[in-house]
Image (tube, protein in one colour):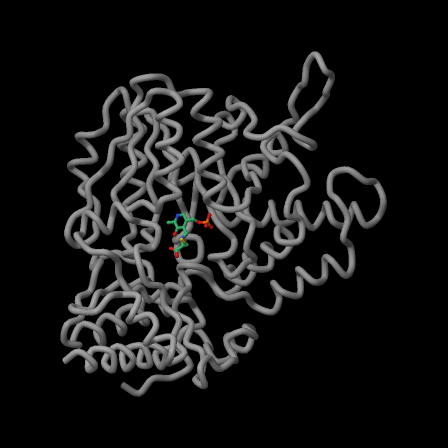
Length: 413
Ligand code: C6P
């Protein structure tokens, strides 16, 4: 196939110019970065924002009244506003900065757990979940005597929604599912799932780690109670992300961590807590990365999620077409609605060996269980090779992947 560096929507060549890391050789070949579900690369404007903060106005926030402190506070709060708009939240108070999705889920498991969960309550997760959306609930269940229930996954990587409906009952306290699966790419019908959970009287947390860079997110239209994002999967820096929560719910939850900033008044006898969102933001936050996160949001917004998705869908479709005809290759995860993630196995080859062979050709993919061991167990495999595409990837890079896989398969044929 004659591939090109433009797509009908976007000038990919110009876009790639914004990502300095992409212009390097790995083992003598041009880097082909297809591990975007693990973390995406960062455009220059994100890197500049990080450096700009440290060079120009490094100061602690919400504390000082000097000029640098005010500048830093404004830049930090501007990111909160950008995120409110990005996910269509009703208010900035509903946006809590965390280290990312893992911390966001742990916050809810700890705080919501203490406020709302009692012995015999049930928490529902799905068989598609990342360990970050399993383990915190197991810990919470152990603490409060609650029970974890699991929605089974079907052969094609979609959730068994009939089984989900039969799991929901008046004991269900919370449903925690991902918007999109990191291992298989499946987009879950979360609007429907949220509505069913609410009819049963349960709250819903959505893990948005893999939807953030790809899908439109409207927390008010979805009516979810919590939504979690990690900046580093959305062209932003590592070490920051958000928890969105409905205001009334967050108000009724106790603080997660104690420390500076989350208090109103402290004495040895009694401490009162700050208002939202600061009640959940103890200690000096990751100011530089939060500031740079705004540039990542702007980068996505300026491109437009519609055009991003159309380009990535084309990459996904082409990758599936190319891989599907290679002998011994089995695509894993073929749901009709997917983000740009394709897992596959090669009969007779361990995923790690394939990953090494691809790396020798400058191609970065992830191999293994992708932090979804229960899903791999359910599929009866040790792991997969996973190619995940971002907006800067090209059809040529899909060709490079397919050629790498053909060469790997030839070794054992
Ligand atoms: N998945 C992957 O290669 P953190 O590490 O907190 O930013 O995100 C955790 C997480 C939670 N949920 C889902 C659906 C995820 O995909 C991830 C991170 C990466 O698939 C790294 S394990």
